[in-house]
Amino acid sequence: MDPSLHNADLAPVPPEKRTWNLWHIAALWVGMAVCVPTYTLASERVGQGMSSWQAVFVIALANVIVLFPLMANGHPGTKYGIPFPVVVRASFGVRGAQLPAILRALVACGWFGIQCWFGGLGLWATGAALFPEVSVPDITILGAPLAQLIWFFVFWLLNVYFIWRGMESIKWLETLSAPFLIACGIALLGWAIYAGGGLGKIMEQPATKPLSETFAVALTSGVSFWATLALNIPDFSRFARSQRDQALGQAIAMPTTMTAFAFIGVATTAATVIVWGGAPITYPDALVTQINNPVVTVIGMLGLAIATLSTNIAANVVSPANDFANMSPSKISHRAGGIITAVIGILICPWLILENAGNYIFVWLVGYGVLLGPIGSIMIVDYFVLRKTELVLDDLYRRGGAYEYSNGINWSAMIAFAIGVAPCLPGFVVAAAGLDPASVPDIFNHIYTWAWFVSSGLAAIVYYALMRGRMRR
Image (cartoon, rainbow, N blue to C red; front, side):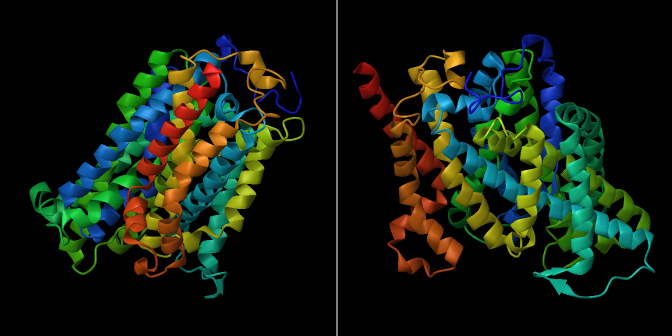
């Protein structure tokens, strides 16, 4: 095996070490789905004009859609015991795989920083409730209050501890945290029903905008939310005992937990309007502190911190750790890749992404869906349609084999990726730069609102056409 393509962390997991059963996969998804971004993904739909039931429905639909690429790309991980950076070599080439791996890693670094910021807010609120007499100078550094920055770094260090401990600690964390997170979600819903005057009352909040104005972006951002894991799910499914465990574990837990917690987020957000009036409170840390009860604050914020930790370690560390290791397997271990992720997570200044809902949803969520959607669809077409699930395992770890293509790069995949991304770029530039939408033809703005679907579908069609011709020759 070529040392530039192989190390112990990227090697196939032997059958005796594939110990994750259906419950472990399901618990993994409970731990990842119950988090602040899931809560806000739904609650901000209400804030942006959807009715309560519309917001819940669109989240449910988005997660049913993304479940299929999750189960599909999980298949090679379980069958061959290999992680995402190795699976993607089959379609992009042993060297070309660096591009999708790095893109996935950078998105994970962004999410890592965002989750650390949410977790730090939970610890900050807990500390303020337990020690109200302690004060921190009221200064701002890089756009963030000093007190919140301090707790951000405390939570960051907690994440680094689990990175250092490795995959078994992640399995343990997800399994133990899942029941606690479910209990926290039920408690939030109970408060909303009690304080809001009943479930019927809090869920009858009407839409303030026509569904035609809100549906496309809501659905696209909802699908893009897990477009990350739709790529690197092999990083987890490689530890599953069977295809049944990985597929059924995901099907049972992912869409149900996401929908349930989205429902809790919507119901709780609607209840805040009834209880306090004014604008809806879309972030759980702000809600818990608004209740102004030290016991509720401490329990609620610790729950938020545990939820964020379990999500962050699983969703935003495992993949980039493997992806960075893939850059130079002989020099970068899984542990070192995780530390690189943590450092970049600080450098992106995640609080700037979260400054407003437009940045978070329309630029961040929809934007990275443009990049990751085509990669996932190319992988699925290559593995299921063209190769009929059969890979030459040894050739994934050596030069000159079946996946060498042109000097290690499959230009068919590169071209399909570029064509998939291209139509979405004008709309992304308008959203990211805050330009007037009229500065580009209106068709590009419409394309961008359906970005994940457009880029994924177009890339899949182009890749199939190019590869079928190549394979015939």
